Image (tube, rainbow, N blue to C red):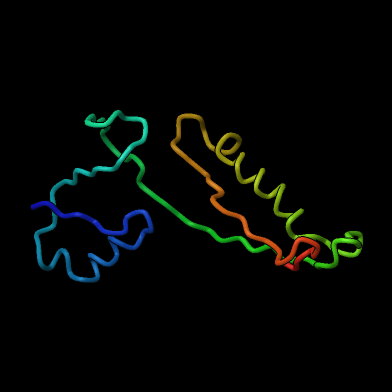
Length: 124
């Protein structure tokens, strides 16, 4: 039997399959072979590796809240966007400074949103 997992990158596909009774409807497998696309392989080629590979995804939303104000008076605000800038840099160095070089790990800051107007220092 071949089974495909939906929504694997959002971390909800396997849970949905189990909730729908995957192992009640089908026998529990003795082993699993997984496939995933890889940008470093030429089209038509595949690579293999025993053990875990690309095995997890966690998403985190971080909201910084500070005192906003008008852009003409930045000394009266504490500027959450300015606070977020070094946070992004710190997050990007977690792997290089906290994880052993032989351990697989990736931290990606995929988006940052802040403020509502060009001349306003927002609250978050």
